[in-house]
Every structure is written in C-alpha cells, then in structure tokens.
Length: 403
Image (cartoon, rainbow, N blue to C red; front, side, top):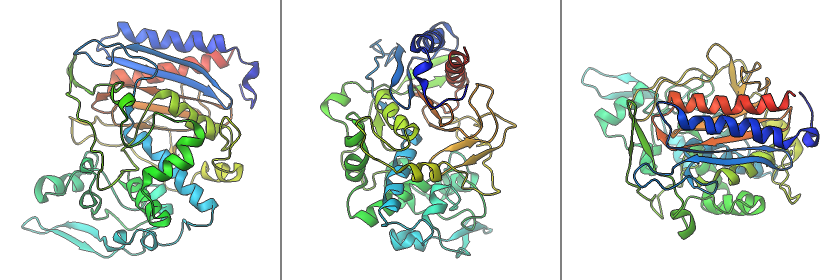
C-alpha cells in the first residue's frame, strides 16, 4: 500500500491486528512486565493500548497514560528544535558548533593510551559542526557501546553521561569529525548549541516550540505531581526473571538538560510528535512546527557514503549487541535512522525510526503516512523478548494496511 490518505483504511482492522499483537505479549516467556503501544496516521491516532503492569512489585496496571523515561527517543525532539533554529536563520548547520557552544571547541581526538595508560590526544583535523552532531559523525561515543570510552570511565574517572553534567559531556573525540559514524552523546551537545543560540534552557525552548503547540502536556525534563504518580518502574532482566528497580526521580535542576536522553513522556504524547513529522511539520491544530521543505530536507540521508553499524554491547547491565535488520544497510537523516531497503515488517525503504535504551521503539513511514511507538521500561537494551514484541507489533500494522 502507498497512499497519503489513510481515510480509506479501516481503523478497526488496525485496532484488531495491532491489538492482537500487543495482547500476545502476555503469554510469552521470558515475559515483559508491561507495554503501551500506539499507531498514528498523519491525521489522528488510530490505535492506543496498554497491557501488563507498570511494576512487578505492586502489580499496578499499565495504562495508556503511563509515563516513560524516553532515553534516546528524546533525540529526535532535540533535533526538531535545532531545525527550527535553522529555519529562523539563527543556526548554521555547517558553521563550527563552538560558535554556539564554545566548550566543544576545546575537545581533542584521542589517539590511544601510552604505556602507563594515560590517554594520548591531538587536535581534530576540522571543527565539529552541528551537521556532524545531528548525524552522529562528530566523533562522540557511549561507554556502553565503545571500548575507548568504557576505558576512560573505568580507568580515568570520566563521569557517566547519566550524571547530566558538563564534565560528562567533555569527552575526547574518537576520530576526526565527518569521517565516521559513531552513536554517542552528539545530541546532548546539540542541546548545548540550542542553549547557546537562544540563551534559554533547552526544556524551555522545547516547551514553547514543540510541546505546547503539539499538546504534549506530559512531556518534559521535570516531573509534575501528575506524571510522578504515573511513572513506569524500570525492570532489569536477570535470565528469565525481572527485577524492579526503586524509582529515583531525576534531579529537578540538572547542570545539563540532556537532549539526547533526558525527557519523559507518554506514548500518546509521542504519537503527536510522530504525527507532526508525518503531516509535513504541522500540528493537529494546523500550527507550523517545521516547514514542509525542512521536513523533506531533514528526512534525507545526510551521511553520504557512510553507513551506520552494529552497536556492540559492552555493559551487559545496560545493553546487548544491537542492530536493526542485520544485513540491511541503514543510513541517518537529521533526526532518525533510515532503512535503505524495505524492512521485513512491511516498512518501506526510506522510513525513519529509532529507539531508547529501556526498550522503547518507534517508526514513521512518510510514504504511507503512518507511524507507531512501542514502549516499555526494561534493561538491558535490545532485550530479545522486547525487540520481538515490537517487530510483531509493527508487522501487524502493515498486515492491516495490506488488506
């Protein structure tokens, strides 16, 4: 199917197929504690449902308004704000990012470790740009995916990215900007660029430019009294068992509002964000978040001949090895991963997607004007049961579209 008008699609068929896939999770082993999943066209949400529990400790039921830590599904929202600044002529994607965030200009390229383990470094061959940051080609990594960063944390007391501090962001580059793709803290630095351009905290800019016009009232860096009572407990996979983690609310005033990982939201809110991209940058009320020209530009492959690669899981508490659709080439737009070929779920080539560390997954298909979000709170990332559940859900949606 390929159409820009899904009014011809029977929403009951999507509800039936997607609902069946979601309910099928309940009888699986190893189990997933609870999931909220939804589907949207460019005009409306056509499916939103919840199964299981928010916490295995107290058995509180999962509900469609449950609040999730978004982890890396925060990234596309930060990228959207950066693209708004480009539209307003306030941000040049190809200028040195240090013009907006001076601290990034001090960073060196790590070349290895000397005989006593001291890191060695040199200046980068060219300055980092916001283009590099948005495409994950600036040279930054994550310690749970990159051995050099892992060694810096374990041997040299480099603060974890989870500390939300400037010290955590000031990591060396792994290579000269623009020469490779490496998934890492790039979008946290985009947040610093945004703050340098606007003179405001990232969360304030997000609220005024994205959350308020889209009606994303449950999304932000800080919890309200309402969202605090609807949060989903983080669970850790221990073999076939799930261990619930006591909730620690994020600090109310972190040094850095981490645009790459720090937001919380509901599935319903995030579907509004996906719908904006499917609707060529327009909100449900008709307000422009991005222009159609910016949406089309942003969704193109901006890696050139580079391609993304498998992510090796170096910290089994946090992540398994991760790769979507092994054997298929993937590239990167200014906000998302692109599958360069048709995916086995039915998602066509050119569709956009990404994920969050606690097994949150989403996609948006600009050809068929449909997208979805599947959310749980389970570690480590790329949990086989969770990935299988998400891919089954996505496949069910495309089965519904094929009739």
